[in-house]
Length: 442
Image (cartoon, rainbow, N blue to C red; front, side):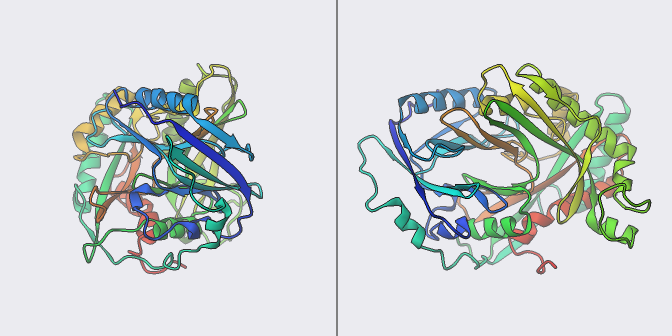
């Protein structure tokens, strides 16, 4: 069992915050203590640790939630803002597999700056009898990180399974599907990145580049896990639950080469390349598996569950995805963290049926995913919060001088191994760009 949490005191005050929230993250902060949850420039960034719990194994979610229940029950909170994300907030990320050697984490930052719908706040948290930081919370907003635009010199190395071997791994999965042992399996690979000079890799510049290029996604940082996920596992707010499912992908480069017509909503033009995605049996099957798994997990907790009959096409800078948004009214009383646990792992990151797909992943991938493809996000004192799936991301090593970046794809009977390798290369573009490993994008 985790040790008992400290007694926390938190206060949130309204402030005036303009510009980029990430510029307020001090450069000297330990990169593993930076937290972030940003979309289209709004959200939250913070640093420091007022309290933290690490869990592992099958009960990692339940142990973390029990810890959080005790923290929020014992805390003293002064919140003059009363918006989602103000008051006491914990950020978390969880290992994909209960057998992972990587611990899951739930952490309460000491300092948090938030902005939503034109309103902004600063939350400060102290433990026990610690004094409040000197000065008004708004004073820290006058500071700006002058080194935010400076990228660390990094070099890329082969991952656990070299790219040249990846098609063979996919082919083995396709053969396994052909036997009827599994309908779909999601396989992922990693790439190693290290600091050229052996120094600590800073995460604030990485987050800045992710936010600038992938603003429509959720840019996140928790305990050294950084990325920009397009997939909302679950959002719980005001008694409503929402989940965005992504499965089925086409590279934008392929789309651009396929047709000279300018981008238009899918289906508006007979030669629109996105029609390849919405008419692809392979991608539609992959998407249907993922939607069904999320709907089945939400039904025990929701009434009036709305499940779209057909997906839409979500545009990102590097790819198009098939997407579906599911919504429902909460009736079970579960927190957002408990919902995330119930939804993990969905078919979008594991496969169908789940136990068989998880076994194939463990057999064929050849690596420990760690917290890649696990839930990542935040939960507040009321139990509301946002939890995405940790995709398009990288995880710092304990020494903070190297990291692994990840990408994967859904494998079904019709999958082509070389096309699946190409898909992972495209998905790695987000982190390679953010780390400065690619030529500057257009």
